[in-house]
Image 1 (cartoon, rainbow, N blue to C red):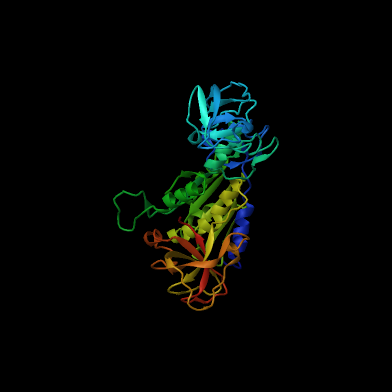
Image 2 (cartoon, rainbow, N blue to C red):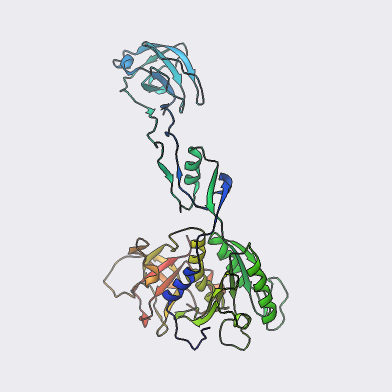
Amino acid sequence: MPTTDSPMRTLDEHRAAALALAAPLPEVVVGLDAALGAVLAQDVRTSERLPRWDNSAMDGYAVRADDVRDATAGAPVTLRVVADLPAGTSGTPTVEPGTAARIMTGAPVPPGADTVVPVEDTDAGTVTVQVRAAKAIGSHVRRAGEDASPGDLVVAAGTLLGPAHVAAVASVGVADVPVHRRPRVAVVSTGDELVPPGTPLAHGQIPDSNSWLLAAAVRDAGGEPVRLGPVGDDPDALRDLLRGLDDDTDVDAVVTSGGVSVGAFDVVKAALRDEPGVDFLPVAVQPGKPQGLGRLPGGTPVFALPGNPVSSFVSFEVFVRPALLRMRGLADVERPTTTAVVDDGWRTPPGRAQVMPVRFVRPYVARDDRGTAGPASLSTAPGTADARPPHVVRATAGGSGSHLVARLAVAEGLAVVPAEIEQVAPGDRVTVLRIAP
Protein backbone atom coordinates (compact mmCIF):
# COMPACT_ATOMS: atom_id res chain seq x y z
CA MET A 1 0.00 0.00 0.00
CA PRO A 2 1.50 3.38 -0.94
CA THR A 3 2.33 5.69 1.95
CA THR A 4 2.82 9.41 2.20
CA ASP A 5 6.51 8.78 1.38
CA SER A 6 5.44 7.63 -2.11
CA PRO A 7 5.89 9.95 -5.10
CA MET A 8 2.93 12.28 -5.44
CA ARG A 9 0.26 11.60 -8.00
CA THR A 10 -0.76 14.48 -10.16
CA LEU A 11 -4.27 15.83 -9.89
CA ASP A 12 -5.22 14.27 -13.23
CA GLU A 13 -3.69 10.89 -12.33
CA HIS A 14 -5.67 10.69 -9.10
CA ARG A 15 -8.82 11.84 -10.85
CA ALA A 16 -8.35 9.08 -13.44
CA ALA A 17 -7.90 6.53 -10.64
CA ALA A 18 -11.11 7.74 -9.01
CA LEU A 19 -13.05 7.54 -12.27
CA ALA A 20 -11.71 4.01 -12.84
CA LEU A 21 -13.65 2.91 -9.75
CA ALA A 22 -16.94 3.99 -11.29
CA ALA A 23 -19.22 2.37 -13.86
CA PRO A 24 -22.87 3.00 -14.71
CA LEU A 25 -25.12 1.32 -12.17
CA PRO A 26 -27.67 -1.28 -13.31
CA GLU A 27 -30.89 -0.02 -14.80
CA VAL A 28 -34.24 0.06 -13.04
CA VAL A 29 -37.63 0.82 -14.51
CA VAL A 30 -39.44 3.83 -13.05
CA GLY A 31 -42.64 5.64 -13.80
CA LEU A 32 -42.57 9.05 -15.40
CA ASP A 33 -43.30 10.66 -12.03
CA ALA A 34 -39.90 9.40 -10.80
CA ALA A 35 -37.94 9.93 -14.03
CA LEU A 36 -36.97 13.60 -13.61
CA GLY A 37 -33.25 13.88 -12.87
CA ALA A 38 -32.55 10.24 -13.71
CA VAL A 39 -30.32 9.11 -16.59
CA LEU A 40 -31.99 7.15 -19.37
CA ALA A 41 -30.52 3.66 -19.80
CA GLN A 42 -32.05 2.78 -23.19
CA ASP A 43 -33.08 4.76 -26.25
CA VAL A 44 -36.73 5.79 -26.45
CA ARG A 45 -38.12 5.64 -29.99
CA THR A 46 -41.57 6.26 -31.35
CA SER A 47 -43.52 3.40 -32.89
CA GLU A 48 -45.88 5.67 -34.81
CA ARG A 49 -46.13 9.09 -36.37
CA LEU A 50 -46.16 12.25 -34.24
CA PRO A 51 -48.65 13.85 -34.56
CA ARG A 52 -50.61 10.69 -35.19
CA TRP A 53 -53.01 12.49 -37.57
CA ASP A 54 -53.40 15.87 -39.21
CA ASN A 55 -54.77 18.25 -36.59
CA SER A 56 -55.68 21.87 -36.22
CA ALA A 57 -53.13 24.41 -35.02
CA MET A 58 -55.85 27.00 -34.31
CA ASP A 59 -59.37 27.38 -33.04
CA GLY A 60 -61.42 28.05 -36.17
CA TYR A 61 -63.05 26.24 -39.07
CA ALA A 62 -61.83 23.31 -41.15
CA VAL A 63 -62.55 24.10 -44.78
CA ARG A 64 -61.59 23.31 -48.33
CA ALA A 65 -59.07 25.96 -49.47
CA ASP A 66 -60.73 26.04 -52.88
CA ASP A 67 -64.00 27.18 -51.25
CA VAL A 68 -62.42 30.28 -49.69
CA ARG A 69 -59.89 31.27 -52.34
CA ASP A 70 -61.84 34.43 -53.19
CA ALA A 71 -62.84 35.38 -49.62
CA THR A 72 -62.16 38.94 -48.50
CA ALA A 73 -63.37 41.17 -45.71
CA GLY A 74 -65.56 43.02 -48.19
CA ALA A 75 -66.85 39.89 -49.88
CA PRO A 76 -66.90 37.04 -47.35
CA VAL A 77 -67.70 33.48 -48.36
CA THR A 78 -70.59 31.78 -46.55
CA LEU A 79 -70.26 28.07 -45.68
CA ARG A 80 -72.65 25.70 -43.93
CA VAL A 81 -71.31 24.34 -40.62
CA VAL A 82 -71.74 20.54 -40.54
CA ALA A 83 -70.02 19.62 -37.26
CA ASP A 84 -68.36 20.73 -34.06
CA LEU A 85 -64.93 19.12 -33.50
CA PRO A 86 -63.44 19.65 -30.02
CA ALA A 87 -59.99 18.31 -29.15
CA GLY A 88 -60.26 14.63 -28.38
CA THR A 89 -63.21 14.01 -30.66
CA SER A 90 -63.48 10.71 -32.49
CA GLY A 91 -65.94 12.11 -35.03
CA THR A 92 -64.99 12.08 -38.71
CA PRO A 93 -67.60 14.15 -40.58
CA THR A 94 -66.78 14.80 -44.21
CA VAL A 95 -66.37 18.41 -45.29
CA GLU A 96 -68.06 18.64 -48.68
CA PRO A 97 -67.78 21.59 -51.06
CA GLY A 98 -69.60 24.58 -49.55
CA THR A 99 -69.35 23.30 -45.97
CA ALA A 100 -67.08 23.73 -42.96
CA ALA A 101 -66.55 22.13 -39.55
CA ARG A 102 -65.97 24.23 -36.47
CA ILE A 103 -62.72 22.90 -34.99
CA MET A 104 -60.66 23.41 -31.85
CA THR A 105 -56.86 23.38 -31.54
CA GLY A 106 -55.56 19.80 -31.55
CA ALA A 107 -58.69 18.22 -33.02
CA PRO A 108 -58.20 15.93 -36.04
CA VAL A 109 -58.78 17.63 -39.38
CA PRO A 110 -61.87 15.94 -40.87
CA PRO A 111 -61.94 14.20 -44.26
CA GLY A 112 -62.38 16.60 -47.16
CA ALA A 113 -60.91 19.59 -45.34
CA ASP A 114 -57.38 20.70 -46.18
CA THR A 115 -57.12 24.06 -44.41
CA VAL A 116 -58.08 25.74 -41.13
CA VAL A 117 -59.35 29.32 -41.04
CA PRO A 118 -58.69 30.94 -37.64
CA VAL A 119 -61.83 32.07 -35.83
CA GLU A 120 -60.70 35.71 -35.95
CA ASP A 121 -61.00 35.60 -39.78
CA THR A 122 -64.66 34.55 -39.58
CA ASP A 123 -67.96 35.63 -38.06
CA ALA A 124 -67.82 32.49 -35.82
CA GLY A 125 -71.29 31.22 -36.64
CA THR A 126 -72.63 27.81 -35.58
CA VAL A 127 -75.09 27.15 -38.44
CA THR A 128 -73.27 29.04 -41.14
CA VAL A 129 -69.91 30.80 -41.06
CA GLN A 130 -68.70 33.74 -43.09
CA VAL A 131 -65.00 33.50 -44.00
CA ARG A 132 -63.39 36.89 -44.51
CA ALA A 133 -59.90 35.85 -45.67
CA ALA A 134 -58.52 33.43 -48.24
CA LYS A 135 -56.13 30.73 -46.97
CA ALA A 136 -53.62 28.60 -48.83
CA ILE A 137 -53.95 24.82 -48.70
CA GLY A 138 -52.52 23.46 -45.44
CA SER A 139 -52.76 26.71 -43.52
CA HIS A 140 -52.85 26.10 -39.74
CA VAL A 141 -52.77 22.33 -40.16
CA ARG A 142 -50.23 20.25 -38.22
CA ARG A 143 -49.32 17.39 -40.50
CA ALA A 144 -49.15 13.82 -39.26
CA GLY A 145 -45.53 12.78 -38.75
CA GLU A 146 -44.04 16.27 -38.94
CA ASP A 147 -42.68 15.90 -35.39
CA ALA A 148 -41.48 12.28 -35.67
CA SER A 149 -41.82 9.22 -37.88
CA PRO A 150 -42.03 5.59 -36.74
CA GLY A 151 -38.65 4.42 -35.50
CA ASP A 152 -37.29 7.92 -34.87
CA LEU A 153 -35.09 8.45 -31.82
CA VAL A 154 -36.95 10.63 -29.32
CA VAL A 155 -34.60 10.57 -26.32
CA ALA A 156 -31.16 8.92 -26.41
CA ALA A 157 -29.71 6.62 -23.76
CA GLY A 158 -27.43 8.55 -21.44
CA THR A 159 -29.66 11.62 -21.39
CA LEU A 160 -30.17 13.34 -18.05
CA LEU A 161 -33.94 13.58 -18.05
CA GLY A 162 -35.34 17.09 -17.69
CA PRO A 163 -38.97 18.23 -17.94
CA ALA A 164 -38.91 18.40 -21.76
CA HIS A 165 -37.47 14.88 -22.01
CA VAL A 166 -40.17 13.52 -19.70
CA ALA A 167 -42.80 15.18 -21.88
CA ALA A 168 -41.25 13.72 -25.04
CA VAL A 169 -41.26 10.23 -23.54
CA ALA A 170 -44.90 10.64 -22.51
CA SER A 171 -45.80 11.89 -26.00
CA VAL A 172 -44.88 8.55 -27.56
CA GLY A 173 -47.06 6.70 -25.07
CA VAL A 174 -44.31 5.37 -22.80
CA ALA A 175 -45.32 5.33 -19.13
CA ASP A 176 -42.31 3.54 -17.61
CA VAL A 177 -38.68 4.15 -18.54
CA PRO A 178 -35.43 2.26 -17.90
CA VAL A 179 -32.97 4.50 -16.04
CA HIS A 180 -29.70 3.96 -14.24
CA ARG A 181 -30.14 3.57 -10.52
CA ARG A 182 -28.94 6.53 -8.50
CA PRO A 183 -25.82 5.74 -6.44
CA ARG A 184 -26.44 5.28 -2.74
CA VAL A 185 -23.43 6.71 -0.93
CA ALA A 186 -22.49 6.24 2.72
CA VAL A 187 -20.89 9.38 4.20
CA VAL A 188 -18.71 8.94 7.29
CA SER A 189 -16.93 11.80 9.05
CA THR A 190 -14.31 10.84 11.61
CA GLY A 191 -12.73 12.43 14.66
CA ASP A 192 -13.15 12.39 18.44
CA GLU A 193 -13.46 16.16 18.35
CA LEU A 194 -16.66 16.09 16.27
CA VAL A 195 -20.13 16.41 17.79
CA PRO A 196 -23.50 16.85 16.07
CA PRO A 197 -24.48 20.45 15.29
CA GLY A 198 -26.53 21.93 18.11
CA THR A 199 -24.70 19.96 20.81
CA PRO A 200 -23.13 22.05 23.61
CA LEU A 201 -19.39 22.15 22.94
CA ALA A 202 -16.73 21.12 25.45
CA HIS A 203 -13.24 22.56 25.11
CA GLY A 204 -11.60 21.03 22.01
CA GLN A 205 -14.86 19.95 20.39
CA ILE A 206 -16.27 21.30 17.11
CA PRO A 207 -19.56 20.74 15.28
CA ASP A 208 -19.45 18.09 12.60
CA SER A 209 -19.88 19.97 9.33
CA ASN A 210 -18.19 17.49 6.99
CA SER A 211 -20.86 14.82 7.05
CA TRP A 212 -23.48 17.45 6.22
CA LEU A 213 -21.24 18.99 3.56
CA LEU A 214 -20.55 15.68 1.85
CA ALA A 215 -24.11 14.37 2.17
CA ALA A 216 -25.37 17.56 0.53
CA ALA A 217 -22.69 17.24 -2.17
CA VAL A 218 -23.76 13.64 -2.86
CA ARG A 219 -27.37 14.74 -3.22
CA ASP A 220 -26.35 17.66 -5.44
CA ALA A 221 -24.52 15.17 -7.67
CA GLY A 222 -27.73 13.15 -8.03
CA GLY A 223 -26.89 10.45 -5.48
CA GLU A 224 -28.71 9.30 -2.36
CA PRO A 225 -26.60 9.99 0.75
CA VAL A 226 -26.58 7.83 3.87
CA ARG A 227 -25.04 10.12 6.48
CA LEU A 228 -23.29 8.19 9.27
CA GLY A 229 -20.98 10.74 10.91
CA PRO A 230 -19.42 11.55 13.16
CA VAL A 231 -17.41 8.45 14.11
CA GLY A 232 -14.68 8.56 16.78
CA ASP A 233 -11.01 7.74 16.41
CA ASP A 234 -11.38 4.02 17.06
CA PRO A 235 -9.87 2.01 14.17
CA ASP A 236 -11.56 -1.25 15.15
CA ALA A 237 -15.00 0.35 15.36
CA LEU A 238 -14.50 2.14 12.04
CA ARG A 239 -13.23 -1.06 10.42
CA ASP A 240 -16.37 -2.88 11.56
CA LEU A 241 -18.56 -0.07 10.24
CA LEU A 242 -16.85 -0.07 6.85
CA ARG A 243 -17.08 -3.85 6.57
CA GLY A 244 -20.79 -3.63 7.28
CA LEU A 245 -21.19 -1.01 4.58
CA ASP A 246 -19.19 -3.18 2.18
CA ASP A 247 -21.61 -6.05 2.85
CA ASP A 248 -24.65 -3.82 2.35
CA THR A 249 -25.91 -4.40 -1.18
CA ASP A 250 -27.75 -1.07 -1.03
CA VAL A 251 -24.53 0.95 -0.67
CA ASP A 252 -22.71 1.73 -3.92
CA ALA A 253 -19.83 3.82 -2.55
CA VAL A 254 -18.37 5.10 0.71
CA VAL A 255 -16.96 8.59 1.29
CA THR A 256 -15.01 9.26 4.48
CA SER A 257 -13.50 12.50 5.74
CA GLY A 258 -10.52 12.86 8.06
CA GLY A 259 -7.89 10.44 9.27
CA VAL A 260 -5.89 10.07 6.04
CA SER A 261 -2.71 12.05 6.76
CA VAL A 262 0.43 11.23 8.77
CA GLY A 263 -0.77 12.05 12.27
CA ALA A 264 -0.80 9.72 15.27
CA PHE A 265 -4.59 9.35 15.19
CA ASP A 266 -5.36 8.95 11.50
CA VAL A 267 -8.19 6.52 12.02
CA VAL A 268 -9.16 5.83 8.40
CA LYS A 269 -5.61 4.84 7.49
CA ALA A 270 -5.38 2.70 10.63
CA ALA A 271 -8.69 0.98 9.88
CA LEU A 272 -7.81 0.23 6.26
CA ARG A 273 -4.02 -0.20 6.38
CA ASP A 274 -4.29 -3.94 5.76
CA GLU A 275 -6.69 -3.65 2.83
CA PRO A 276 -4.75 -4.36 -0.38
CA GLY A 277 -7.38 -2.64 -2.50
CA VAL A 278 -7.07 0.75 -0.80
CA ASP A 279 -4.17 3.17 -1.33
CA PHE A 280 -3.20 6.16 0.79
CA LEU A 281 -0.88 8.56 -0.95
CA PRO A 282 -0.15 12.26 -1.53
CA VAL A 283 -1.64 14.08 -4.50
CA ALA A 284 0.00 17.17 -5.96
CA VAL A 285 -2.92 19.49 -5.27
CA GLN A 286 -3.78 22.21 -2.79
CA PRO A 287 -5.94 21.81 -0.82
CA GLY A 288 -6.36 18.06 -0.54
CA LYS A 289 -2.85 16.60 -0.63
CA PRO A 290 -3.51 13.50 1.56
CA GLN A 291 -5.93 11.11 -0.15
CA GLY A 292 -7.14 7.54 0.12
CA LEU A 293 -8.78 5.63 -2.69
CA GLY A 294 -9.68 2.10 -3.67
CA ARG A 295 -12.11 -0.75 -3.12
CA LEU A 296 -13.15 -2.49 0.06
CA PRO A 297 -12.87 -6.31 0.02
CA GLY A 298 -16.41 -6.70 -1.30
CA GLY A 299 -15.71 -4.32 -4.19
CA THR A 300 -17.36 -1.18 -2.82
CA PRO A 301 -15.47 1.96 -3.93
CA VAL A 302 -14.16 4.03 -1.04
CA PHE A 303 -13.04 7.65 -1.32
CA ALA A 304 -11.07 8.68 1.78
CA LEU A 305 -10.87 12.47 1.84
CA PRO A 306 -8.93 14.78 4.14
CA GLY A 307 -10.78 16.19 7.13
CA ASN A 308 -10.30 19.93 6.75
CA PRO A 309 -13.62 21.14 5.33
CA VAL A 310 -12.29 23.03 2.29
CA SER A 311 -10.03 20.08 1.49
CA SER A 312 -13.00 17.73 1.76
CA PHE A 313 -15.13 19.95 -0.46
CA VAL A 314 -12.47 20.42 -3.14
CA SER A 315 -11.59 16.71 -3.07
CA PHE A 316 -15.23 15.78 -3.52
CA GLU A 317 -15.64 18.19 -6.43
CA VAL A 318 -12.50 17.09 -8.24
CA PHE A 319 -12.40 13.35 -7.50
CA VAL A 320 -15.71 12.04 -6.14
CA ARG A 321 -18.40 13.98 -7.98
CA PRO A 322 -17.22 12.88 -11.44
CA ALA A 323 -17.22 9.25 -10.30
CA LEU A 324 -20.77 9.52 -8.97
CA LEU A 325 -21.94 11.08 -12.23
CA ARG A 326 -20.40 8.17 -14.12
CA MET A 327 -22.23 5.76 -11.80
CA ARG A 328 -25.44 7.55 -12.73
CA GLY A 329 -24.74 6.72 -16.39
CA LEU A 330 -23.61 10.15 -17.57
CA ALA A 331 -20.86 10.46 -20.15
CA ASP A 332 -20.22 14.15 -19.44
CA VAL A 333 -19.00 14.32 -15.84
CA GLU A 334 -17.55 17.83 -15.97
CA ARG A 335 -18.70 20.92 -14.17
CA PRO A 336 -19.40 23.80 -16.56
CA THR A 337 -16.26 25.88 -16.92
CA THR A 338 -15.46 29.41 -17.93
CA THR A 339 -12.34 31.47 -18.46
CA ALA A 340 -12.14 34.39 -16.04
CA VAL A 341 -9.79 37.26 -15.29
CA VAL A 342 -8.18 37.43 -11.83
CA ASP A 343 -8.81 40.58 -9.83
CA ASP A 344 -6.40 40.33 -6.92
CA GLY A 345 -3.86 37.53 -7.52
CA TRP A 346 -2.44 34.99 -5.09
CA ARG A 347 0.52 32.71 -4.43
CA THR A 348 0.45 29.06 -5.49
CA PRO A 349 2.14 26.07 -3.84
CA PRO A 350 5.37 24.90 -5.51
CA GLY A 351 4.92 21.77 -7.61
CA ARG A 352 1.21 21.34 -6.90
CA ALA A 353 -1.91 22.24 -8.81
CA GLN A 354 -4.13 24.62 -6.91
CA VAL A 355 -7.91 24.62 -6.69
CA MET A 356 -8.82 28.07 -5.39
CA PRO A 357 -12.36 28.95 -4.23
CA VAL A 358 -13.35 32.16 -6.00
CA ARG A 359 -16.32 34.45 -6.43
CA PHE A 360 -17.37 36.42 -9.49
CA VAL A 361 -17.11 40.12 -8.72
CA ARG A 362 -18.04 41.88 -11.97
CA PRO A 363 -18.24 41.43 -15.73
CA TYR A 364 -14.92 41.58 -17.54
CA VAL A 365 -14.07 44.61 -19.69
CA ALA A 366 -10.93 44.13 -21.81
CA ARG A 367 -8.30 46.84 -21.33
CA ASP A 368 -5.02 45.24 -22.27
CA ASP A 369 -3.52 41.87 -23.07
CA ARG A 370 -2.28 40.35 -19.84
CA GLY A 371 -0.64 36.99 -19.28
CA THR A 372 -2.51 33.82 -18.44
CA ALA A 373 -2.16 31.22 -15.75
CA GLY A 374 -3.48 28.66 -18.20
CA PRO A 375 -6.11 26.00 -17.65
CA ALA A 376 -5.31 22.66 -16.03
CA SER A 377 -6.09 19.63 -18.19
CA LEU A 378 -8.79 18.70 -15.68
CA SER A 379 -11.03 21.49 -16.88
CA THR A 380 -10.39 21.66 -20.61
CA ALA A 381 -12.36 18.73 -21.93
CA PRO A 382 -13.59 19.49 -25.45
CA GLY A 383 -16.71 21.63 -25.45
CA THR A 384 -16.69 22.47 -21.76
CA ALA A 385 -14.69 25.69 -21.60
CA ASP A 386 -15.76 29.10 -22.78
CA ALA A 387 -12.67 30.79 -24.24
CA ARG A 388 -14.05 34.27 -23.58
CA PRO A 389 -13.34 35.89 -20.20
CA PRO A 390 -16.80 37.07 -19.19
CA HIS A 391 -16.12 37.80 -15.53
CA VAL A 392 -13.53 39.00 -13.07
CA VAL A 393 -12.95 36.63 -10.14
CA ARG A 394 -11.50 37.16 -6.71
CA ALA A 395 -10.27 34.49 -4.30
CA THR A 396 -12.52 34.08 -1.28
CA ALA A 397 -11.15 35.50 1.98
CA GLY A 398 -8.44 33.15 3.18
CA GLY A 399 -8.12 31.62 -0.27
CA SER A 400 -7.52 27.90 -0.32
CA GLY A 401 -6.99 27.65 3.44
CA SER A 402 -8.27 24.15 4.09
CA HIS A 403 -10.09 24.92 7.36
CA LEU A 404 -12.10 28.00 6.32
CA VAL A 405 -15.49 26.38 5.97
CA ALA A 406 -17.58 29.47 6.81
CA ARG A 407 -15.87 31.47 4.05
CA LEU A 408 -16.43 28.62 1.60
CA ALA A 409 -20.12 29.52 1.56
CA VAL A 410 -19.49 32.56 -0.67
CA ALA A 411 -17.52 30.61 -3.30
CA GLU A 412 -19.16 30.47 -6.73
CA GLY A 413 -16.38 28.65 -8.54
CA LEU A 414 -13.08 26.83 -8.23
CA ALA A 415 -10.15 28.25 -10.18
CA VAL A 416 -7.84 25.45 -11.31
CA VAL A 417 -4.20 26.54 -11.57
CA PRO A 418 -1.63 24.12 -13.04
CA ALA A 419 1.29 22.91 -10.93
CA GLU A 420 3.90 24.76 -13.00
CA ILE A 421 2.42 28.19 -12.22
CA GLU A 422 4.23 29.88 -9.33
CA GLN A 423 1.96 32.85 -8.88
CA VAL A 424 -1.37 34.13 -10.20
CA ALA A 425 -1.18 37.85 -10.87
CA PRO A 426 -3.97 40.40 -11.27
CA GLY A 427 -5.13 40.28 -14.89
CA ASP A 428 -4.17 36.64 -15.43
CA ARG A 429 -6.78 34.35 -16.93
CA VAL A 430 -7.76 31.14 -15.21
CA THR A 431 -10.19 28.32 -15.86
CA VAL A 432 -12.99 28.24 -13.31
CA LEU A 433 -15.27 25.33 -12.49
CA ARG A 434 -18.70 26.80 -11.84
CA ILE A 435 -20.13 25.36 -8.62
CA ALA A 436 -23.01 27.82 -8.20
CA PRO A 437 -25.70 28.93 -10.69
